[in-house]
Structure formats: C-alpha cells, structure tokens
Image (cartoon, rainbow, N blue to C red; front, side, top):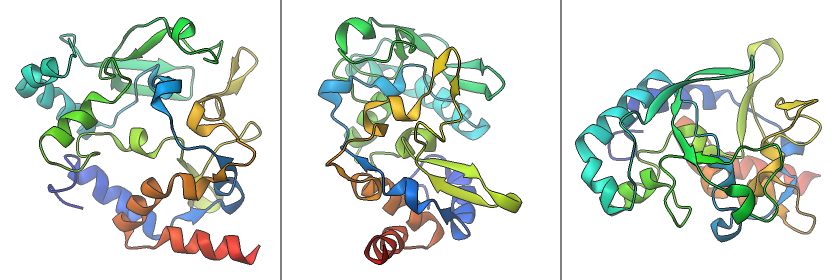
Amino acid sequence: MNRAITAFTDSMKRLGVMVRDLQLDKKGLHRPLKQCDLAKCRGTCCHDGVYLNSEEAGVIRELVSESREDFESLGLDLPEQVVVYGRWRDVTSGPKTATRPEPMHETVPDYPEHFADTICVFLMNDARCGLQALAVGRGKHPWFYKPSTCWLHPLSIVSGEEGSKVLTLHSDETDPQRFDDYDGFVPRTHCGRTCMGGEPAYKALSGEIKMLGELGGRDLLGELDDSHRDG
C-alpha cells in the first residue's frame, strides 16, 4: 500500500506483512451479520474514540493542525487536543482520539446500557466519520485518514497459538472485553451483533476483508468462500 491509498504508510506495511501468514477464524467469520446502518446506530462503535499507534497519532495531529478549517466546513468544532492518552482497564492504553459528550442513550433506542454517553470528536452530526468524509472530499480512498482499527471494525486481529495472528469476529463467548461490570464491546455494537437471517460476516464485511487481503497479497474472500462451500 502507498500514499495514494493511506496516510499511514508504515502501519499498513506492517499490517501487510502480518496478513501474509494470517490465520482465519472461519467459524467466527461465518457468524450472520447485517451491514452497518448509520441512521440507526449513530456511530455506536465510535462512542469511546479509537486507540492509535504512534504513526496514526502523529498523522492525525498533523492533519488537524493543517486542515482545521476543512473539518469546520464538515461541521466539526474540534478541540485543541484531538489525540489524548487513554487507559481502559489492563486491556488497552496509549494515544486515542478524544471524545465529547453526546446523549447516545436518548438518541439510539438500543444503545448498550454500559456504553458511555460520549462520541469520538471526529463523528459528524449525521454519524459519518469526519476523517473519512475529508478523504472522500479530497478525492482520496475513503479510509485514507482512517486508523485501521476503525475501518476493520467489527473485525479483530488477535494472537493465536505459538505467536500466530488470527482474523476473527468476537462473539459473546470470545469477546475479551466482557467483565462483571462491562458486558462486552464488539457483539454489542450494531455491526457486530448476531443477526439470524443475515449474511455470513465475511460477506457483510467484504470490503474490509478484501482490502486487508490486498495488503498482504492474499484473496481472503476467496479463501472464506471456499471454506463456506466446503462446510
């Protein structure tokens, strides 16, 4: 991947190397889903911002510094600090996009009770991502400025046996963010919820999986199609 596709060149190169030997959780990736409907979810998955690596944090800071007026034209009044330090239990810590208060429980009827009434500062009034809208407006790939964790959601890459990496879709049983006082993340977001009668996840998320495969020179969709036919 190059600058014509992404602003995060080094991060995408590393991801591409990972994809070459990536294992596929075929059971998880066949779980039925519905495609995202922003009019209903209002960006539920964006409620706490997104954790970033150092390259993503630097690029986003620089982008806002150079393009604050362009974001304002999208209706975003960004804070001075769009990247802050976050710590979530012992699971994740580091730089992340900042959030702002938003009455999500009032505007999203089935908003998870344990999610906070906040949203990422880059979420626009119509629930679109401002980073994506800016890229499209500049004639770039929609995910040019979008961190990989954002465009991959609800997919996750996790550690498997003997140091391997596995592409998966967390369920109620496998979600690592389930605790006594916190009822999970991925399967609680609209695009990560099981939907009986929906498409197999790898088809509902075909755009994300296709791009991920291209990073590492693999036809991940073809591999998943073969596994679907076989069983």
